[in-house]
Image (cartoon, rainbow, N blue to C red; front, side):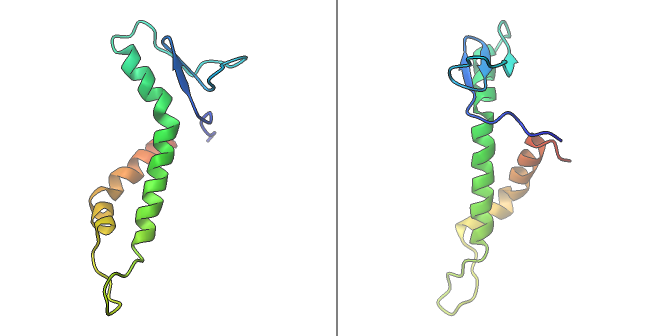
Length: 102
């Protein structure tokens, strides 16, 4: 599997480019004329940043599993643990989907 074109991606008049100056660059998406072209293009352009943010959030939450906040050294559920339990699968699924994994 190949990797995606690295960001940042930018939106300019209905076309998403891999670089702001888009000099000599092919476009990533051309959605001119689509019903929701502007909204779709902004979402596409944000994709690399969103993927990295999800990876960073997941990493931080997973690291928090090892945090002990009890005075006696016993682990206690904290907000990061609860969030990971509630949303970790969805975060992992979104990352896998973006990376083309099952």
